Structures are given as structure tokens and as C-alpha cells.
Image (cartoon, rainbow, N blue to C red; front, side, top):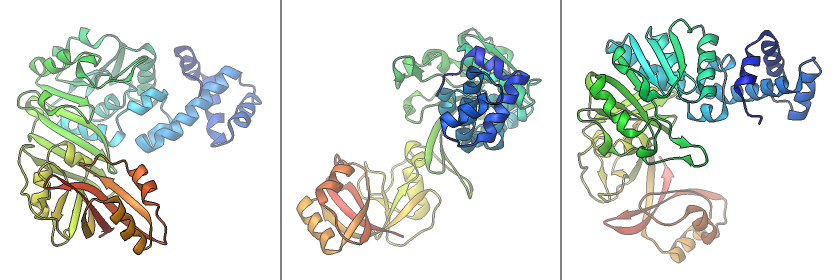
Length: 395
């Protein structure tokens, strides 16, 4: 896929570029060479045609994140991968507006999705990104969606922004570095973690978007840590500071059936007991937010091992916070005995999940040499510190 450049982006913003984009959109999922020929046959130059086709492809991918807005927005491939989903950005913006924010500094604005959501809540946004192309795309998106009057975009180092001039600050530090890919050490973020962590002392209404694996110990004093999943995929962690904080920890699940939230201290311990007839595999937002004990209380459940986030009950309880499985067998792990049992039951298809096990599911599936018409679930875990295997059915 051709790389978008500032020069190509500026050409896409001209009437000729708008025509090229419209032609590219008409071609849909046409084969790339045929699509390129079709665009050029309309008198559009090769470079502009390639840029338009790239945007058409990225807009198609972006539809899942941004819905109808995607057809008018501009994207880069890295920017699309890292951009906040529209529904997550909208919830964040609503929370900022409800707290009284009327102006906001957006540090590390990316493609501008959080700035757009904030502007739609009536918040004036000063959006900053250190990358010239990214800043230009954010400005183009604000213009394309009719929000340029509320959003100003600047290509600048986030650390130079006078954040005290704004009611609120939102920071999404870059977690990728050229040549290194994704970085996991907050000290390698851009802007650096020391700067980001000090923002709540400068602007009480501070919200931070962070990687889901962020260490809980990095939460500023009194802040709320929220972990968000969309359709079962863990997408981000957010730290809410100052007056924005409501609960120490929050798990937010955005599903087709609505939004579900679970809150708690993040330090409670769940009761431990025997495996029951039902196993609950909590949503990753529940696990990452350290709210497994709070979840267990909602179903009257217990852990089989104090270090493993599987919850068990004797009776089925419906819950939006976990997938429930029926447990048919609990066995000490033995490859030979497990293979014999699965063969006896004619099980040729396995859905394997694990926690607390070093086994590799794909290799185990090969070693089991499965054959037969039936399917089952297999859970590799520990009970009282010992490796076990649970055979399960969907309940």
C-alpha cells in the first residue's frame, strides 16, 4: 500500500483529489491493478490515483471503528491502527463535558478522533502532534467533519504546550518508535512518562489514554484506572485524574447489547474453593482492571486457585462480564490419558483456552492427534497450584 505523504494529502484536498477519491470509492473491492487502471482511465495521474485508492482501502478498514464518518475522513495505516474507536472517544468526551470542560488540550492527537468527539460535545480543542503528516491529517479530518471551528491543530512538541490555559488536558502518548515498533516501557513514551504523569498537578481535569498492559502502580494518587473492551477485545486503559475520578478501578464493556460497567477497589481477594459445574472466563477488561473478585461476587463464585482468574459456580448465572462454560471433567494433566479420553469420546475439534499453563495450545492440539465428529472445550489451568485440564461445553 503506497505511503501517504503531506504532499499527496494536500493534493487529495483539492477538487481533483475529491474527484479521485470519489472514483476510487466507486471501485469498491476491485482487484488492485484493475482499480488503478480504472482510475487512471478517468484522466487521473498515477500518483494521485494511488493515493486515492490507498485512502479508499483505509476508509473501508476504518468503517468498523468510525462508522459513516470513515467515508469522509483521511487516514494513515499506523494512525488507523492506533486511533481511538469512535464509541470509546465519544464516552470519554461526554465524561469530560459533564465535568465542566469547555476547552481542552489534546496532546498526541493522532488522526484527531478524540478531538472530534470532544468538539461534538461543544469543547474547544487545541490538538497537538509532533509528526507533521499526522497533524495535517488531523486538521483535514476536523475540516471534513465540519468541526474546524472548534478544533485547531498544531504540529508541535506536546511538552511545549501551556496546558494551564485549558480546562482539561487529554494525553495519548505515542507508544511506537521508528525502527523499534511498539514500546512497553513508559519511560520510552513520547512525550515521556515523567511529563505525562505530572499533568494532573498542572490541570486537575486530566485524562490519559494508555496501553492496556500499563502497570497499576503508575496510577497518579487518587486517580481512577479504567480498562475498556469493545466486543470482547481489550482496546485501552484510561487514567481519570482529579475531579474526573469516580472509583479506584472500572471495567467498561462496550457490546452490541449496550455498555456494562463493573467498579471496585482493584485490591479485593475472591474466595477460593473447589471447581464447580460452571466456569466463567471474565472479559479481559475485568481481568486487567483487577476486578475479578468483584465479578465473582456478582455470580456468587469462587476461584479454584488464588492466582488464576477463572471463576467457578455450582449453578449457572447469566452475566455480561464473562463467558460461561459447563465443566464435565476435571483431570490432572496427563497427555496420554487425555488423548485416550478424547479419542474414546470421538472428539475431533477442541476450543482450547488457558491460564497459568506453560503449554502451547497449537502444539498440544497436534500432540493429541484428534479424530472424530464431536467437539468440546479444553481449559488448561491450575488448581491449588497443580496443573489440571478441564473438559467443558458451552453453557
